[in-house]
Length: 353
Image (tube, rainbow, N blue to C red):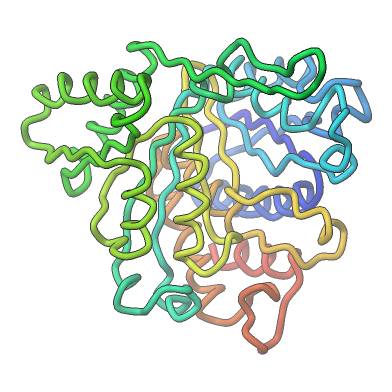
């Protein structure tokens, strides 16, 4: 097969980690007889610097013309420290999600046996943890209008809006994923307080009759936040709204012991996007110390979800596991042993595929 892959390195460590994922993709293509064609485009602060906007039309064209998108990271302290900035890198990510119709963010949470001791949770709590978050991406507080501040600047306001259609499409994906896994779906909301959450719960309940084989439970977000830490093995598939998902997925990410290990996929109407869950880590940019594993595993998800090639995705996962077991890792998980550079880890993984 031939693939057209749009590569959006982004900011901070983004260019370094996407470079390692490209190495893994090329290694898979050599092994399985595929061919990948790459088109690079700016996004985030890099795009603001070169084009004046965080998600330019030229980048959108690249995304629309690609079979899948490999994305690095967005964020720059120049903008974080300027509350008056008119344009921000993160606006590019929101625009990309909206224009590409990326309504579902998929984040698997599981542990590597050889790194289970790095988790802040007890070993017996993280043993065998394997669940998936489905976070709705294009609705809720992040996109609701009106949004802004009063003329005197003393009052700010956001609006949380959800339509039944938006809720149905993400919940249906949740039911389908649960049906393919251990047949348990947890719908997370705040239905005791929020009107949007009550619509979420009503919609999910009505849809659940179509999936009698799936055990469906409903959990308030504060309870879910506790249970993810107290009993993470309780979960199979979790589906929730945008802001709750943003917070809970970052909370769940600490279970693995390093943000640098977790990939994600954003699926939707047009081209799907694959990215690590961590940020741009600008302090490490250009130092060859960033952990590329999450981005490499995002490439594995690309083969599995965008190209329907699970064997190719598995080849990357096996190579990553070998890298970790052999101690060829970056400083964040080296535990006092030898710490390898970003490029060295990428080379090792590619050679192991």
